[in-house]
Length: 119
Image 1 (cartoon, rainbow, N blue to C red):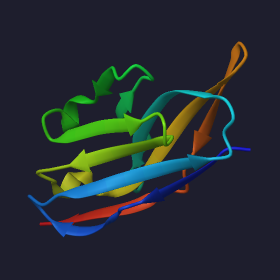
Image 2: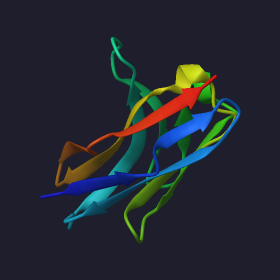
Image 3: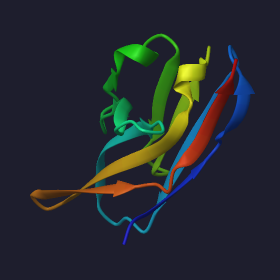
């Protein structure tokens, strides 16, 4: 059973920075893609950024140039450095690990961490 634990959310003013981290425990299998999603009140969960096992990254347009995703394969961790934060970045942020077990992939989610940006 894979468990993901997130940390690093909080309240900051617009223009500030936060760093989110997510660590996996219990995985004996390959963790393929890692990513961060967010969900604001009344909205659907959306992709923020993703990173492949080899380090290729993908960012949603609304965070390009402001957020940076990184991972440590040895430690099974993923981080999201968020700079130049805006009030519209306010949401619950979830990490996602895609674990490969043979030919099948499974998605695991963190518990979510609240990020609030004040104007």
